[in-house]
Image (tube, rainbow over all chains, first blue to last red; front, side):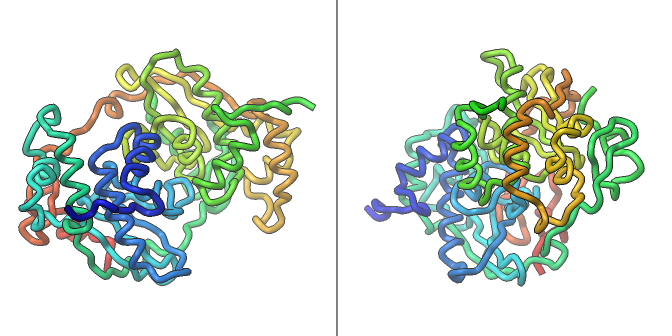
Length: 192
Length: 192
């Protein structure tokens, strides 16, 4: 049996399960596979390079990135783009070059429970969670693909909010570049 | 001197500074004020109600939510809408009713360093970080406004990804509802 001593970042496999449960609410398969993917990607970033992360799905994987890297939604070093792909990239935050790690669906033949999960072949209630976790641990990086990438220039650099003023309608501070009143007062409020 | 024993969620003020530094990379003013706001909002949610969070800015505040509530980007209980307002809401995930907490710029008269920070009146290098932190601790909830809200129905409920297939171009698993090939292969790839 291989991968008995699998590490995910600074965690043992079991420690990572606990960290995922604590942050994400439960040890979701996507956060566990995601952790293995993030760990794989980090190992391929040159030491000392300040990197950002781009996540190609909003499901589960962003939390693996936030658990294992310095990149979070709130510090702006993690960007989530809803492309619907179970993949992420880490890239030099100034130059844009880095690596992309994806879940390679062509390598799931020996891991039918992972295949079932990824392609949603069974209703959630019928998933064998123990077997799924066992296959994730067994598979490790075997099911991950890696590519060198360079991020498009529009995603590089910090985008300043520009000047801030009080909205003349609601009174709250807002970026002037959004218009003469804030976006919420312009009708984009999510509340009824 | 008031607010000497301020608590932020389960943390003391100093413990929360350390948690913010560990997760966000540094104890950013927005994560600290945000923590006070999230704590205020949580106290007004009825016990036992499962709630989601909506954050009206992508800067700093989402990390306060992720530190203090069960809501994260990856578990889908936190939604970030870039309205440019320093405000968040917590709401009953089934019914949509809840509270919105915002930084009330009309109450900053006695806290000039917070006012300077919010309206970006000084370059970052000229901020007095110690004074800013002191004023944040001193102000506590005094600078927070609260409103009852109800979230619009389109933000309620879970949106299923639907069926998943392999993209006929790149081979990766993608939601069929995105089209005959995945969004990335449709030209939305963020890589060059």
